[in-house]
Image (cartoon, rainbow, N blue to C red; front, side, top):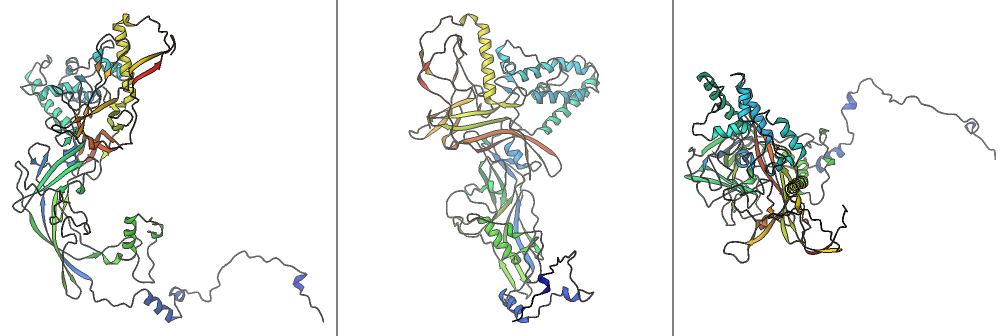
Length: 615
């Protein structure tokens, strides 16, 4: 048998391509862009598979009429104060949250930054009137120089940065708040009282006009309660409580917020209070109005929406494959269900509602292309206690009675965005299981300059300053006895000064229920011959009632301090209202704490004695 061998086995070659491209048979692409399919049966099968052959005796909506009733909030009530007309000129958060700025603490001046700010504003107003008025007002309302050897100025001199700032402005800058407080006392007080340089009537008239502008400027700069503290803040609950109402039928619909503490006020913060048909006090009368709106329905659309036709490509802007919900992610599952299945079944009927309005939709008349009319009512109607009913943005009814659900929707006059500063005060209420106590820990306290500082650092510096002043006043109290015993008996140890104790006490007339009462620990200085003084809190959040005359006790309900504790902070809030005005106020936020803690408090201990000369 002959054997044949291919030449390629002996002559190997290397094949190269420097470009890969198609070789079209024609210069036109019209047929290629048509995406022709030769198998018509396959196309029909895909149409059957996608349900394009299913008939539905339903018509698309072409016209809709909505009947609803609307009214507006007219009254506001905080605490035990009588109801008054609600102020629509500011966001509701400002009315509910604003607190007075503290310029004194335990009878001592603080908030140096705002005092200087007000002083600069007043000097700017009176300098054009007369050149010598600046020095005159600095002499009368100047910042006093602190005395480092006086215990009354220990809250300033104990902290080096605070002391330096006071020394930098002492006798050189004006305390504007002192002038403001003098003018607000009334009784015919004027800004030129005691100012010898205001010798002419024209100068005094100009100063009076400047004083009016000065007061208006400060009250616009910081929104504060008109009288005293804000009655909506409930210290025993560490929450805000308020109510507002709107005219409805022959009475009023009362909205009540029992627990508002999280800083964002919205429709879910209030409930319907059917136990009250009106709020006490007078307010402008306004009746509900039935309104009918006619719409041309438009379909809900979004980027990447699945198209109903099989051969239409969707937008690439939305990649639904990136949504990967877990089993508990019910919201994501519902979203995907809407996007992929029922996206083309929803229509939009836009309705513009007034700010502060309370609206109830009575029904919706829908007309389709066949001329059929359908009356649609709210899906959430029924009993308020039926948890299976479907509803959104409706208000719950206080209590557990089986009453008809309220289908009203409220559009509260609130700010869309609020900026918050660093906390001026911050406290933690926590449980100490070892000591079997509740403590209020002042994590951040305000200094005399108006800025906040860590509570542990502030307490240590203040205690060291008092120890220094005590030894300087009583140098003979330092003992010269050398203890040779290796151990000593200690009745109780001390805890940091920024830990404020709360002790349980019985409620009045109760033998089982208790509440927490603020207490105090003695400040025991080494070799102090005097009676120890009580350690007072440094934050306004825990000083509740201490600055009153006489001082008042402070109680906190036990259920407000859970095992996780509670964190409360005081900070400046800032927002811009719809008319362009900037509003600034001092507000409180309450959040869940970080769990329990240990103060290290112990009794009846035997502790070793440090050798003489040891540190």
